[in-house]
Length: 88
Image 1 (cartoon, one colour):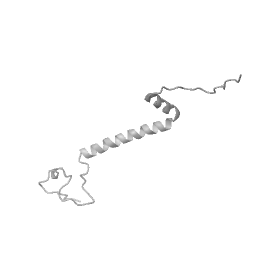
Image 2 (cartoon, one colour):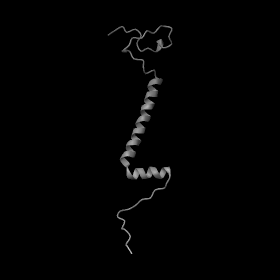
Image 3 (cartoon, rainbow, N blue to C red):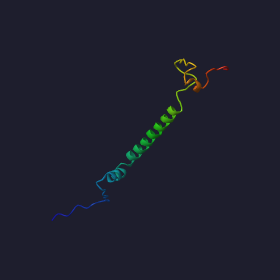
Image 4 (cartoon, rainbow, N blue to C red):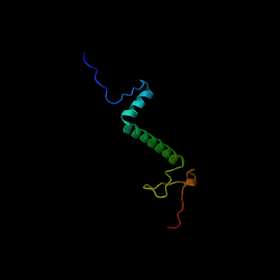
């Protein structure tokens, strides 16, 4: 009879579900799981920031690269930051 191999350390068994796979990933590669979580949080915050930028008429700058003519009948004319700049 051959002796059974000795197990050194400890073995943790995880369930074969989605939660079990996540727990196994957290156990084996915590750096990757943590970096992925932080990346997803950053993408979510960037999305919220872009939404707020667009909602608050974010492309309404006083100095632009391209000149834009806005007529007085345009509904965006009242939103301009400084339609007549009198002092530099």
